[in-house]
Amino acid sequence: MKQSRRYLHSIVFLLTVIFNISISLPLHAAERSEGAKSITLFAVQASNQLPPLWLIAPFITLLVMIATAPLFYHRFWERHYPKISVCLGVIVAVYYGVFVKHGLHLLEHTLEEYLSFIALISSLFVVSGGIVIKIERRGKPLINALLLFFGALVSNLVGTTGASMLLIRPYMRINEGRLKAFHLVFFIFLVSNIGGALTPVGDPPLFLGFLKGVPFFWVLSKLWLAWLVTVISLLLIFMLLDARVGNGEMKGAEAKGGVSITGGRNFYFLAVIIAAVFLDPAVIEGFPTLQELFLLPFGIRELIMLVVAFAAYKTADPEALKSNEFNFEPIREVAFLFVGIFATMIPALELIGNFAATHAAEFSLSRFYWMTGALSGVLDNAPTYLNFFAGALGKFGLDIASPADVRTFASGVNSPVQGDVSSELYLMAISVASVFFGAMTYIGNAPNFMVKNIAAQSDAEVPDFLEYICKYSMPILLPLFALLWFLFFNP
Image (cartoon, rainbow, N blue to C red; front, side):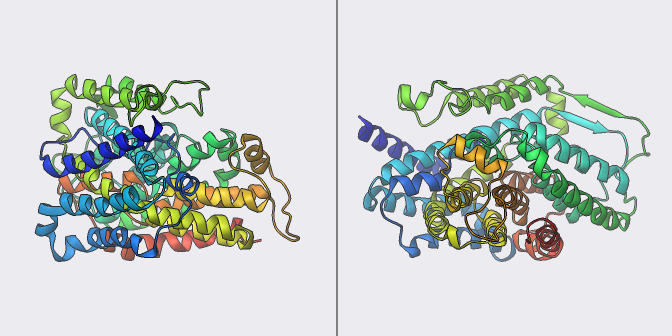
């Protein structure tokens, strides 16, 4: 029965891939559910063999094409990126389905992860598309900084994805006529990534830690100072840059009013989506799963999210959709690209998981911080977090599968290595690095790509993949992350 189920889900995964090639209709699709489990940990447990190194070539190829296509072969990429992404994913899927023991089981799990990702991203995208927040002021350094700070706080309540989808349009609207590339970059830095580091709801890695046993308010109590230092530093840099832009050429006279909201009933839909995130057996003991009951590759949570998205779209205020210039193209691109990323990322994550498990004893606190961060910027930051979290627990003789061990680790225990630091510092370093470094590239965290696509749809000035890294994230973020390391993680 189980084997039949694995074959069924693997076939569905491949059919999903083929389906993505063939359709050109708008998708009610594209962030993995915060409650989803790590692909890599599952892979290490399910397979007794590591993939060959050459199998990461499809993943590297996809990243290189995402980075270079807008510069050198834009028209070709726009026309063929769905086929390219899916075909590269199929290469890896076929290898695991044919040559890897328990590979079908792994493909099944990857499909579940992808569908959870699609359900959350698409539902938040559709619901926020029916909400128009009008701030009746022009964008100025102080106004923009306050909005970014507000977005960073809100991301801890509705997640970085929810806050990004809710605020990116009003943020662009108040800066009409003066919107520059750095405006979008700092929005991604603060709202789509770093802001969500204070609660498990804020960003997927922290939610996975909560599911494993990290106390809910541990994050706030331990990370608030690093969060505050980083957010204030970025806001000061932003205000200096924004002061050089001037008033721009916004249409009409400057308004002095407050804030108006159209489509406010969609906030009820948003609340349902956020609540659905917690519908996980790891949170609610005994909660039923459609995977077990009906052999489906998605659960009740994902079903609720997609039903909410459909209802929100059908009942949306037409004026709100028109004002937001709402269409499905941004979500369509995310859906196609991330089906390839999810599939091609499997061998890379599996190799990293094995490396973390076998070398954790040799890693210092600094190594955990920088390696978790570096990999979170180019891979999925949630499984990267879990892999290094598991490695750090193993270094202290604890097991990530035991909630009691995880709570002990979070509370702080002495290292068995003389002169080493307490375990809670390791968890702090892994948590900060996985969330903050997600801002290093467009693919470090799913909201990054969504913000980029929404801005591009509005004809805003959007930096390409390489420009984002070379002009913004490396010269601005890396010195800040080095400062965090020196202040908090350099024993």
